[in-house]
Image (cartoon, rainbow, N blue to C red; front, side):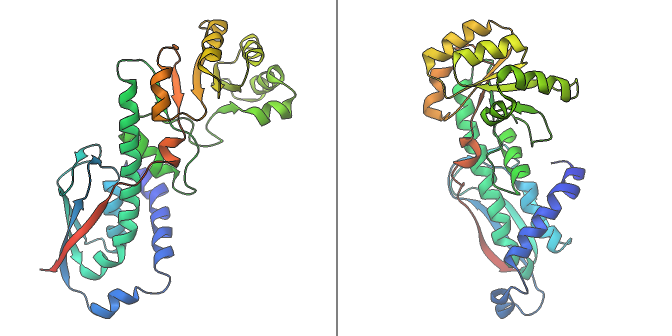
Length: 283
């Protein structure tokens, strides 16, 4: 992550997470370490996966004490395996103990998403299809989770509601139909914005094409229905497939000729990667 994003967007979120974990004091740490003492601790991978979130891990400790030093032996995007030492953290032992869980929570979660994304993206190798994430992210953690998708080899869909026009079923219902929704978006949105619309049947596909939608999202359609939709669209719009897209399902979608496949599972269902801080000792 670049320094400006870190300072303006990430730091406040990390500080909030630390305040959640330490409302007045870290009682356990203050019991055993009443005064400052320099120590070191190792960051250890406990299973194979893609590491992601190392700058965030480091930032947790440097926000607590700028004098904390972290020496990394890997970088975001690297594959790690069980037992691998990934970093050494040196600083006030009180800081190492108090920041441990928050730092690991970010690192484990981001690494899990990067690992899941890498495994899913591998199924699209040899195609021109982009693997996209969604807005199905943990509240206040979107910036971390979408970064992890990129590290894992995926691409980001819109970041938030201000980022692009995506007309879904309820927007269509509010507008009175597919054509009306596209026409209203075309009249309102800045001309530089593409207009994407979600469709669920072939009649809506035809209507979206005729209305001039830039991107048509085929939502929860069968393979045969999507194949028919592609014939109707015939290159007049880009096409995204969405709806219950899992790793098991992706392989069956590669023959359709779509541009994008989006999967909420990348962020909402990725398991964490098991990581620990071990061997804390005074130096």
